[in-house]
Length: 113
Length: 120
Image (cartoon, rainbow over all chains, first blue to last red; front, side, top):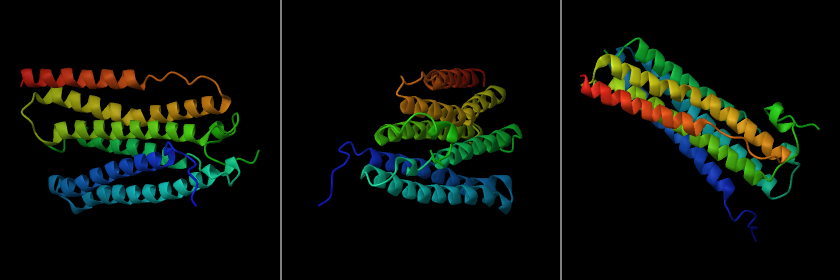
């Protein structure tokens, strides 16, 4: 019999929030894959979109591991210091800032004409 | 304590809170990240789609949006860390100024876009 250890479903809501975030990153990356090469005229502009998709998949996988880690803690079976840390959060924040910097460069160089 | 979680400046402070509060704090951070991505996308779209707007003012509006989207993750991380430390110390949660920043940013870019339409 499974135990209902969190009727607020905090863990599932957090996992879904991560999935939404990874999806947002993935959709932006697909848009970049579609638009950048044709607008900027070089196949090398596929690389930002590919990097974004790879990072989105990586964060999704990392989040799954964190979900398992938190789930174990909620079941009361492990030392609290073994809960997942915040590495995934800082990676996502840094990625978003990098995307902002890249878009700033695109706007300032007026590559869209 | 052999807590090797990142960042040590947060996880070596105080004692472990109810994990559900930690998860709620994390969801707040993720919401701010998605907001930042939306602002960046909006700012880029303003330049990308060649709308019939005053070029200089629409450039300012774009930069305003993208610039806000660029600093929001840093401020969200700072808020996450401060809130997590407060949870661990069992002290009141700190104030956040991200809401005011977002309101000013969106209102300001709206004004700039209206001017860009008016002066096209």
